[in-house]
Length: 193
Image (cartoon, rainbow, N blue to C red; front, top):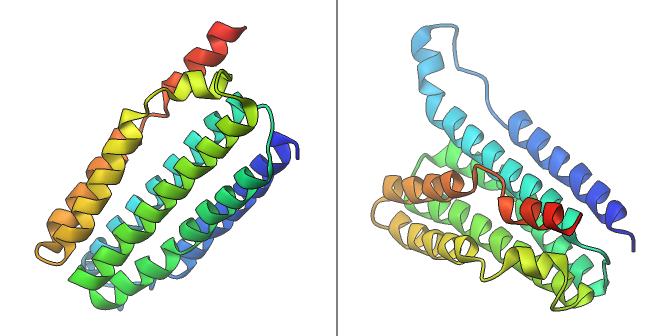
């Protein structure tokens, strides 16, 4: 399969996930500032989710710029990534209904953890398909940021059962780490030209 086809499909699914997330949000219960203020927690959760999906999208785009071939394993790993990211609207709705309480907050982290694992599997499958000396393999290197992110997600899931707000803070830290797209791939592509 051509890399562009996988990229276009992923773009479409992620656009739908973002749209569903915002459509699932409830409008304020009234027209007062207090009613609007009551929606701030879910608005922040939506913003964090939008940023998280955007981070996966931008890094996925960069990853596919460096990939040359897409084989079956990469397709399945990418589908797993899309599956987990498509669950973001579900967990956001659960948090909206229940509040920042242990199980929904842990579920949010679990969905992000599984998306991160699936992203890593997609990356590895693309590297295997292109070879150990491919541009993508050179760009990714040891992927310290990816490993740190996985650990922070696991810590956040654990923290959710004792201090849900700490879990949210850890999820925000992961987002902050990745907010700027991964420049390793851009540098590798520029060096190759």
